[in-house]
Length: 224
Image (cartoon, rainbow, N blue to C red; front, side):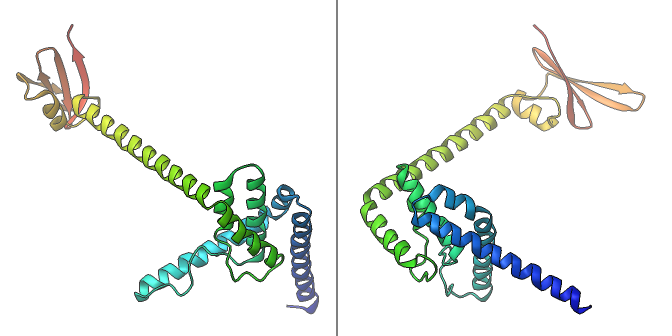
């Protein structure tokens, strides 16, 4: 591999690093100016990439702890990476300004108290002040969200039960012969229909005929 090629790769890497630092510096200035929405927009791509890596690292920590049957040395979900923290801070301030207190708390609560990056004093002071100021509202919002999730789960379970109950009371094309008997009981009679390539059964009930081939319902004939 020639020196010119290596040099060109090095130049690209340095350029990307400088560009990344430039974006973060720009976002930091926007945050200081109170333009949180624009700061979030600038940081978004880098935040997504860093957050995916951070989540992957958390999963590895959990996997390692499970494998060795020991506790996790560092808590998962706590963020100290500058780009993530800056984005979370901008998101919290933006959400608070829009009256979205629960969303703001979700953004700021996992910022590490050991964060040492840009605006660290400002961000950590805001975190403490925010969580203290809105403690009761955050708890109320958290309780409401938990209730909403519980209600949604119960609704989904009820709908699933109703679908199963409906299925248990009806027969459809493709159902197994055993299901037909479970729903309609034993037929009054059974006729065997012979085809060139096999046989089928006609199950006779008081107001309908059910046709079975290869163990499954192929047709249902209802009499008025």
